[in-house]
Length: 480
Length: 62
Image 1 (cartoon, each protein chain N blue to C red):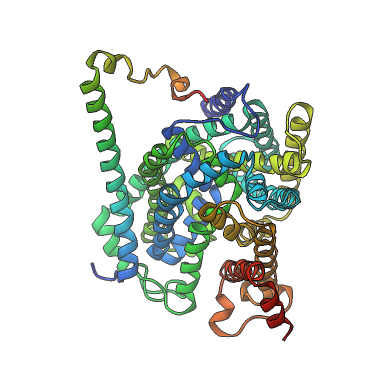
Image 2 (cartoon, rainbow over the protein chains, first blue to last red):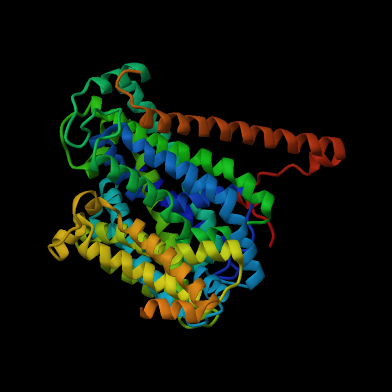
């Protein structure tokens, strides 16, 4: 009964906070203070996929996964607030953009780019949000007497109502609240794990003594050799650099008050993400000392929580995981609805259209979540890569050089997207062997599609610049 | 430090260092804001401190 009350109170708190954002534009956030800004950014960034999924990998691969946490802190958060957040806000104000797709289409003076980017983002992000909803539903079903399907319906409903009630501003408030819960939940887990292994130094010594395994072939405190190390490094790059151009995170910068606010948000966001991902990955890797059995990575964090934390702590941690999922899901649902409802239609969203498009996206995410979770998890990772490959170069170039020609927007977007897709299909061994039976030879086979997509997109941008400067010379060279 | 390799150790230290740096920056910023307020107008400094009446106090107007 007490458990049920905690969850009902949590749900009501979310709806109350979402309601604080009412009477604002559904798509634009207005300006929020540094505290909300930093917590909302981190809560959108980190989902249960990161905490539970990568946490499970830490148990398997050891402390080398801290490279991901360090990358998320410095490249994914500090660098973003130091160099990208304020220039994004400045361009958004300068161009009068309402969504990230709108920003890029205005920056590249191509109105047709907006619906294309809006639809691509909406499709990929609805799919990503379905994986996030599924993860949250699995956790909720463990905490309450509900089936996974019932949990899914409740969660999709709460998020959809929250997004409808408060628009983007309401979403930011709920995310900030959820970010704070995530910090407390992870800290509980860290303290519990350190106590269980007999203290920090004893735990690390025990971890160092565990014999190497194929996934940690140089021990649990060292980077693996060969392709294993490349996998970790690419994972760190995708999760730390790939996020720069994710529309749901670009949109968080629209809520900045001024340049000082961006610089002030940096340490707070770094602190919060450091505690959350650093803490969760460290605890999961250290848990190898007390849970040496090989188990499914997805079960590591739930098992650790049920073994180490008291009943109240378990509930708090489950709320933290559900919060991680819902904060990301509400951001994704909002941006997908904006993509379909405003970018695709080319008209300002509001009233019945807003309600319809949010419900449609929520239903889409719920239905996708019913599909096999394995397929969804794969599509989830791929969606980040594809969006980064399509948008990163145009987005960064817009921040640095301002308004440019449409060719410089279209060419890198299309070439980046197509190259990453092609590499997934024929070059990247992890996916291409199943899709086409082909794979690039040697270490090229582990080269992540985001690297290929970004390199191709950058080359396409250079080609567009060259074509505009010396069209005759370049055309002749291409013809030859 | 047995078993650690340089890459993983650097990552771990950069996380701990980042947390310490962030806490120090936050403490310093808070201190500066308080000092600035009290020097400019001691009476107003007291009144202008955020009133934490629930989450609403976190809002800022557009």
